Length: 120
Image 1 (cartoon, one colour):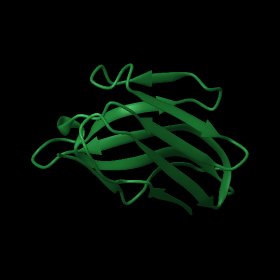
Image 2 (tube, rainbow, N blue to C red; image 1 turned 180 degrees about the vertical axis):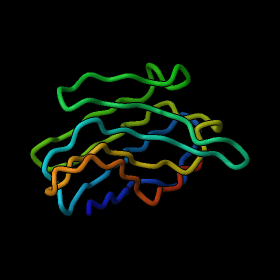
Image 3 (cartoon, rainbow, N blue to C red; image 1 turned 45 degrees about the vertical axis):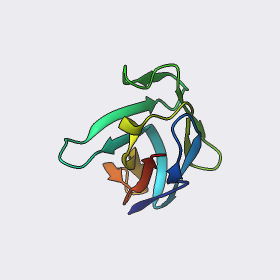
């Protein structure tokens, strides 16, 4: 079984920056797509950004030009650099990864989330 652990959340003022990290560990054979989702209070969980194993990316319109997703395949890590943060970016951010485990089963994995709060 694979585990995802996020880090890097916190409280930041509008216009500030944060960098989220997510480490994947456990029974991993290969990691395919990785991504970040977020869920604000009273709202559905939504996609923020995704990245394929080859490095292709896609972003929610609301974060294009401000957020950058990247990954380190050697370290089984995915990152989210968030710049020009706005109060509406406040949410719990979840790491997601599509993993083929050592039993060669495809699994969809979620981290427990990290809180990002943007407020003055």
